[in-house]
Amino acid sequence: MATYPELAEQHALITGVASGIGYAQAAAFLAQGTTVFGVDRKHNTKVEQLLQQYSNQFYFEQVDVRDPAAIQTCVDHALSHAKFELLLNTAGILDAYAPLLKTDLASWQNILATNLTSQFLFTQALLPQMLNQQHGVIINMASIAGLVAGGGGVAYTAAKHAIIGLTKQIDYDYAAVGIRANCIAPGAIDTPMNAADFRDGAQMAQQVAQQTPAQRWAQPEEVAALSLFLASPAADYIHGSVIPIDGGWLEK
Image (cartoon, rainbow, N blue to C red):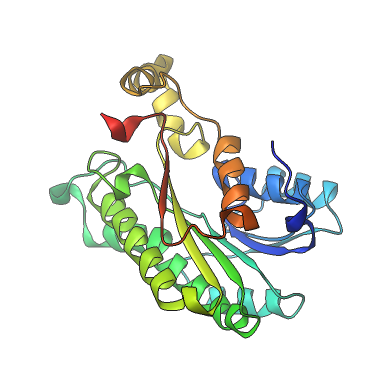
């Protein structure tokens, strides 16, 4: 993995750090020397590993990202300890690929609250401090489901499309005053969120790999490596962009 010395003195707030891409991002930034304030609704063994390995560098707060008051309290707590240059909105859940007529209102609201509204709220809470220092990098987790149908059900697809619009508008509104916002659009990534595809002999996972031009699933560390680049000064002229990491899925 490439090294970015400029990230060593920075502070990042990352959501969804207890597993998958969020965990890989936290580990990658910590390895660069970044101080990471991790957020997740679960406090598990992976979180404990990071707390023990990076005892002076990794901080964790257990938060339900669907709860606006809890998000504000979390960000206020984080800001009482440090100023943040980086925000990675990664927390998210799937919707079992449910079409509209099989999606009730509660499920719709849960997906949008977790995947979309949490990004709006964390950004809204942290952005004023970034504006005060005239610098901030925001990386939102979208999906190929934010660009085409079929990567999720109606709620997931709608949320991921909206994340792309949210990201572009944030960058459009604040780029001139030092804010840079982009989003990542992963394809098939081998994470606990996609564990169902690997059950029953992994037939679904094999089908997905066969339909992907690269003929494989990616590991979350590959998304984390892209996140490091987007957070670094090397990506300073990349604004309001959607960066696919999908093994060629969208080229079909």
